[in-house]
Amino acid sequence: MTDIVPSQVDRANPFASFIRLDRAADFGPVSDWASDFDLAEPPYVTDPTVRWAEQRGRCPIAFTERRQRSWLPVLYDDIAAIAHDIEHFSSHDPIVVSPFDVPINDLLPVPPISSDPPVHTWARRLLLPAFGPSAVEAMSEVTRGLAEELIADHFSDGSGDAAADYARHIPVRVIAHMLGIPVEDEEMFTGWVVRTLQQGFQGLAFVGDALDAIMEMTVYFSERVAERRAMERGTRPRDLITMLIEAETDEPMSDQHLLGTCFLLLIAGIDTTWSAIGSSLWHLATHPDDQRRLRQDPSVLPMAVEEFLRVYSPVTMARIVTDDVEFKGCPMKKGDKVLMAFPAGNHDPAQFEDAERFVIDRARNRHFAFGSGIHRCLGSNLARMEIRVAVQTFLERVPPFELADPDAVTWTGGQVRGPRCVPIRPSA
Image (tube, rainbow, N blue to C red; front, side):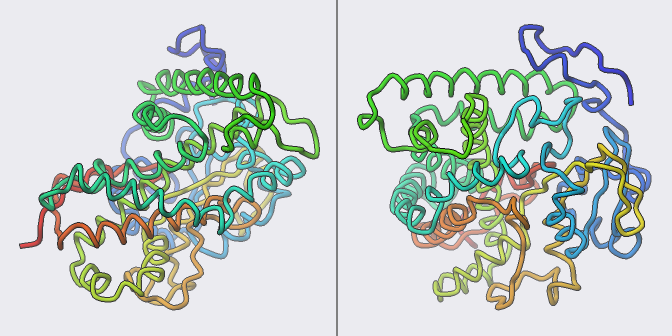
């Protein structure tokens, strides 16, 4: 590893001194996936299943020193074992490729996802009621209203971009509603997600912008928290920010913890579901039989949602090796990253029959699109509801559709994989 060096980031940004240029630099093409993999490789972003199949047969746990020492397991059982072993694999830095020299939890905690027990235990517990089944179902009509509005605005003739004009907007508007922040600021919220999770993964040229986005979020949520605290208890809006301010916790909640949780709820509530809804509509645009089946028999939709999640799982997380350990013959060193390729595990033929085929009514579907272990996504109920309502409303309001230009479809990858352009038109 190279020494820490000053970055090209504005010196006023307090995170600038923690940047490592070696982790943010651009690299050449992959020569051997088993010893030099790259989640940003364009063919991997477009269709990672080819690499997963190659790796399962040749090297189930790949290794690279590209950007940082990292391991990539692709077998379901291996990923599950690591996810449950919190003694050897910490969540203090869940970022797949971090430009920082220290774990994100030491620099900008985003609990509970970046914390280990005991902090993780109470940090997660205080959020659970807001994301339980009844609370989420109460948001379904709001979600449907947003979906119908978007369809009326962008798909009146059956044409439009199912990713940019539809999937992109639903989750950000829903989570803004839940946080109690203005939906009118949607473009700013989405911009933060793009700059931190998408562009920040792509190389040195974008790192400064990603750090600026973090600073902007810090200022924004500091102001929102200050506004709530200036109000008398009982007069504050009943939203997630107020819930965090008024929470009784096992230990005092710092402002850093509170702000980090706000960051997490906003960012995790946007990019992941944006990708999942977009992937689902891309699938239906390219698989007319499945689209026809859902139109004719809406009762299949719950099973279809689970299969969308399995086949197009958007999220890869990371763990940090806490001490030298050998796992399945791999000599993992303290500080190494293990990239939790949950999407790869969901394609493991040892776990799923006919794993590479989308089976719209798959009965046994124990996927882990939402992760596994103590960090299983607490927003899974919300994501499922948003996908279900978004797909159902689209099929009800938009006539049969297909891709208008398959070559125009684009995907983003890295921490979160999903389509960003899905142009559709009425089916011929």
